[in-house]
Length: 474
Image 1 (tube, helix red, strand yellow):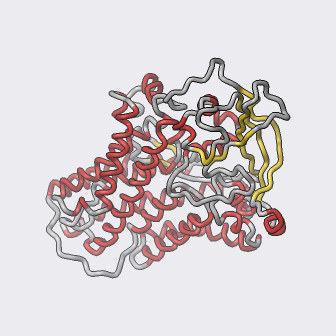
Image 2 (cartoon, one colour; image 1 turned 60 degrees about the vertical axis):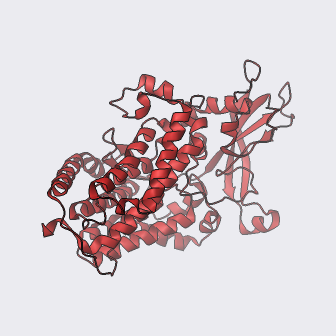
Image 3 (cartoon, helix red, strand yellow; image 1 turned 180 degrees about the horizontal axis):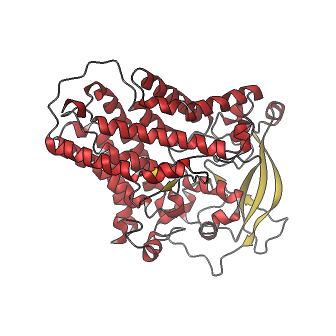
């Protein structure tokens, strides 16, 4: 069936698949390097405890049947290996059915991780990777031309992602309608990047232009994805450029990058398509059946998107096949940070020597300039930003973090940039204090070399110690 395929998109598919495999690789690497302290057997939110109270049908995962840290590590590193093979083009070296299996493997592996990741994996880009990754299974390899149905569904995801984000802004914080949100956003975003300070200090009229351009890109341009070429390519390219601008201005894990990957699937590259075999009947039937099923399931995110009570970042099925997205429906005007400190004193006093723990990505030392981490995801740092917004966001895990710092737990300390205590001399007490942070001015930067200025607000957690003597876990 000639109408079933679009041979001219063969290079678009190739670029999309290789780029998506890179995102998978980053996601699995993040899981492998951080899980022990977060969801491991002795983590802050252990997987065994979670699967004991949540049934398999609500959170399908292999870890319902068996969990150990060694097994989880092998699972994550297997995901890295398969992703690396896909980056190298292994799916093009095998028959069509085998290539589809290769793409199915990382989806199944990552689904098992996300479904037991709890609050550490509650971000929209986790579901987005799974939704896009599932479609990638049916995109085919070098044996067949790209199916039009799958290309359409990829654009449909991109449309819902961007248009939904645009709607949540217009319905949410008034600063989006007043074009003033970027007066605050670069300073208060979850994890600033190395250029965020400079973005914040751009002239306010330029910020107004940025917000207006964002509205056009999210509310108008996505409609053009479904128009004939070259308009669709121009629309996708504009969305890609916008995402690259966001990459420069902050650290949003792989959210911007997977959006760019989706945009690449809609770009028609000027090249001659190679000759390929006709798609086998079983493949056509399977793709059409999956496409019809996904469109039917899409009723829920569409209904949410057009609803006045629109919600952000929620999956409508345990397999994360269809989801709703959105970000920054409201923008904080003031940045707060939780600063964690420890002391070796037997009796904690205000004049004790309190030493500050430094995190890798979140602001701490006012002189420490932010680094670029995205697309790598610093999960603890992101949750610390939420904790500063409200202690309710940290209720399930912050006590576990404090306990592990009091034990000098090595897996937890690996998540930090610096611990002020030697490995064999843990602190006796830990406390947490809330500070207000703001970017310094150009003059303050020249005079002090600090990109942040901070002011003490209040106590976040009083000095706390272990009830029993410390015993090293490992």
